[in-house]
Length: 320
Image 1: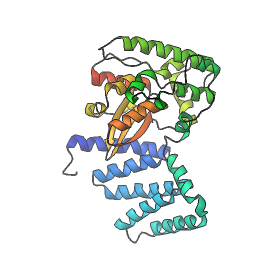
Image 2: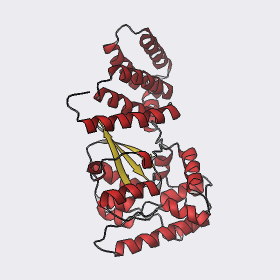
Image 3: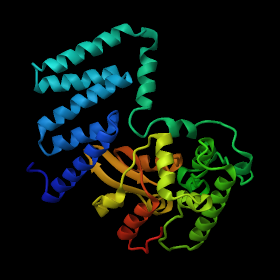
Image 4: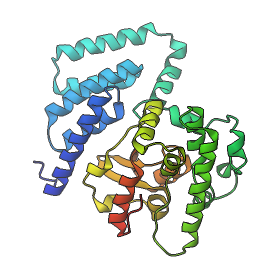
């Protein structure tokens, strides 16, 4: 065991390793999970395991066309294992592919691939930034408020934009739900959250759009989550099985944790892992990133699991 780690820190890192080993096996191309795994193994002194993960990370980068990142991983491995024939061969393959691709497109290819790296993918983020026409039913609810393009402070914008419209647009665009169901769910969640905001001074959990969609559509939440994960390839975290440090949760303010159902659940090296029930809430994500000095890895989790964690941390009554 590393001398600088307490027994609790060591146990937490082991739990992180166990979780991300499962995630990386389920999604072999998940570069971010490999990176977290590598850092976790290094932190507890398991250099050999870290090198094995680094090899997988290099291969994942190669597959995605991130040749510079793949070469860096290989060079790091060769510093520890200078005579590794597999890594030398892998570097040769990387260099061959680098030389064979057109020079004019090399930079753009690398940039595009990097933007889509990891299980969180570019699917959701590309949709957030698009100017697609909204369904008429959603427009009737007064949507598409571009508060971030105006003069409002981001924190003020947070109170005006609940972040659920992009989520609704995605679900209807993917034909997971109809426009009518999306509109009904939006109306319900906004009504509940308006009642919550009127209870000044009280610590209460925001309502979940996913839960309202499930109720309005008559779809089991697990089925809805499965459809969402298939469509987006977002990372999923079974938060109900994770032992979470309360101090990690409290690194974000309550307007993000309670108000947006957002739970920081682990920190490994310079990466903070955060679970959300709405992966399309771009404004809340932006504010969260501005509040912490970490790279953030985002995961989707069940609203009920997020609610239980927050209820435990803030001593609230659980709200599914």
